[in-house]
Length: 264
Image 1: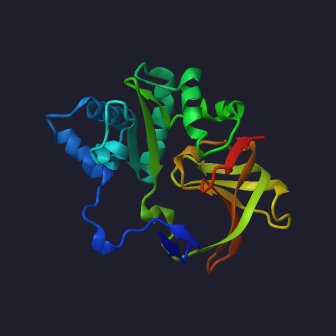
Image 2: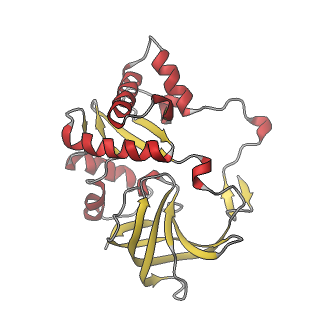
Image 3: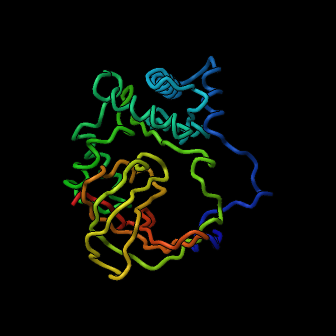
C-alpha cells in the first residue's frame, strides 16, 4: 500500500523492480483469436468480441479480454469480461449492444431472478434496497447474459482522450456527503471511470456549504446509473479538486460499502 500524494489516499502499488509480467487485454484477445485450442469460456469470449466488432463496425484490435481469462485463472463458471478501447469505438459498441439487447437471441438483459443473484453478490460491498437496484440495473446494456454466461463490458478512453495526466489535478478528501441532484450531463456515464455532471438540489448530509459539480467512480457498477435529466440521491467521498485552471468539488463513489447512487 502506497500513500499517493495526488489522490491523498492509500492505493495498491507494485514497485517497478518487482513487476514480472504486464498482462494486456488486447493482446489476450489477439492470442485467443489465433489459438486453435480455446476452451468453452474462451470460445464464448471470442464469439462475443466478434459479434460486437461486427455489429459496431469496429476492429477487434480495440477489444480486449480482462478478468480471470486474461490471467488464465478462469473456470467454466467464470464471467466474460471485455474491454473496448477508445471513445469513438466505445460509443459505437454501446449503440450496438443496445440494439443487440432488443434484437438478438444471443445477447440479453438479466431476468429478475438473475438480478436477485447479482444483488446478493453486490450487497457485500454496496448498500442499496432491492427495489432501487432493480430500477437501475434492469435497463443497463453493458452487462447481461451471452451463451448462458454473465458478461461485463468496460468502455475506456485512451490516455490522450481523457486530457489529464497524473498530477495535473490534486484531490483533497473532505469527508462524506450525501446529496440530491439532477443529472445535467451523462455522456460519460458509460465509461470506466464514469462521470456525471450534476446540479445539486439539496445537501442531505455532510458539509452544507459545498456543492459538487460532478459524481464520478472508478468502479464499473456505477456506470449507466442515471440518465440526463433524472434526479438522483448519492452518497460518497467528498473531494476538493485543485488544478491550475480551477478549483471545484466532486463526489467519488465506490470506496466504501455505504457509497451509492439511486434514482430519487
